[in-house]
Image 1 (cartoon, rainbow, N blue to C red):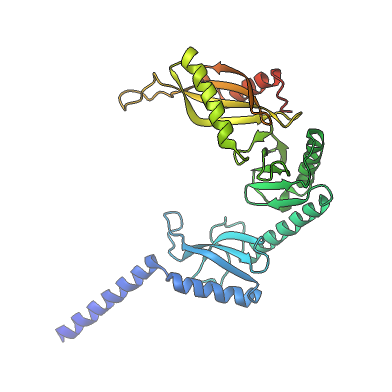
Image 2: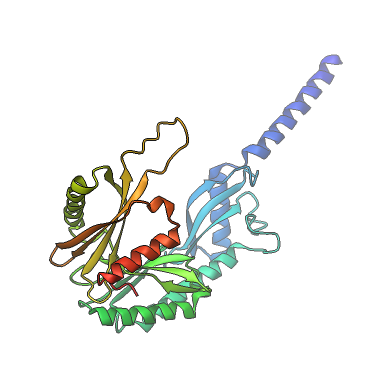
Length: 330
């Protein structure tokens, strides 16, 4: 009798352990995949498929049945959305668990948003089909490809109207707070101008033109400019060295003149773990060049105290300096 009672107790303990562990282990990835596949087939007749299914278990959710997944249209992969869902219960409840309780979101809510975004993008593309040979949307960029080399005035005009068009449907586009336009031409098919767009007052605003580092033979230009800066520093400011941080502004009025803003580290500042850490990035050098001719025509140390400036103050100093040198940014 004692043996029987002990056996029952042990069995109960074993069951509790198994049940308890299952709450932390969750369903298998194979089962999660099968559930999601069944759900998409049932709800969308196989129109939607998925990839990148991975368990999303952390201290915030404490639910081992939550999986992250990319869901997309099988025929039009551009219609896609990434989400987190309860793969164990998806067949009976497709409410998404990672949203606030006041926002009841389902898989179909996200699908409809993705579908609307795609349709809006196609409308934008259609509106500019006579001016831009190809418009390609991605997560962080919009590529604008022109079938002929465009003048600075024409580029400024079309980019201004294109940005306005984006702002007319900013909610439907749902692209995020910041991305960039990438300008491609027959002369620079890989793209050479980048135009950052940032959100201000609930609309996208254009920032100064930047040179794309994807441009053909960029390494040649980079080597020339860095050597020029290093030679100048060796004579007048030998305690500075070039860092990996730089920004390259392009002149709107020519699309050829540029200002290479190079950040510099002060070699005299050594952080060896003893005492208070000190920011070594204190120098800022500007060098002016022509992209078409690769001619470098001027260079100067802008400041030796960039570490003391706020981002806004530093940006203002840069823009004011290069504008005086004829690099139009606005």
